[in-house]
Image 1 (cartoon, rainbow, N blue to C red):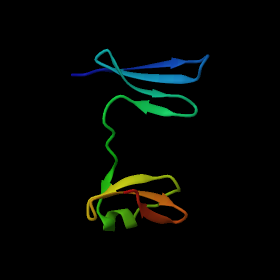
Image 2: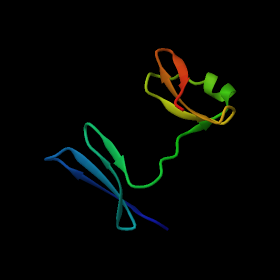
Image 3: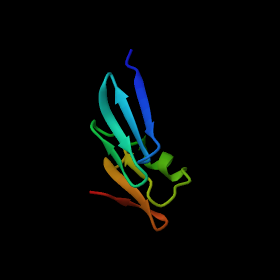
Image 4: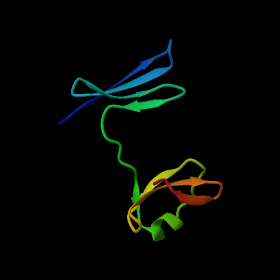
Length: 79
């Protein structure tokens, strides 16, 4: 099994995630950086419409085969 190690640094407000000794993600108060592919939640259009989204949410719509973001009270295609 792969273990994930989480390190928190109080002086620079950084959290690092390591898996099997390899840094896979870094979170700061302003940014999240990852060194591996990111997988977004996948929903059909019907499932998406049942969500209670907030501005900035991002999903993959498997009905439309599109990445979508929620902005200004509507879902918009990101490509």
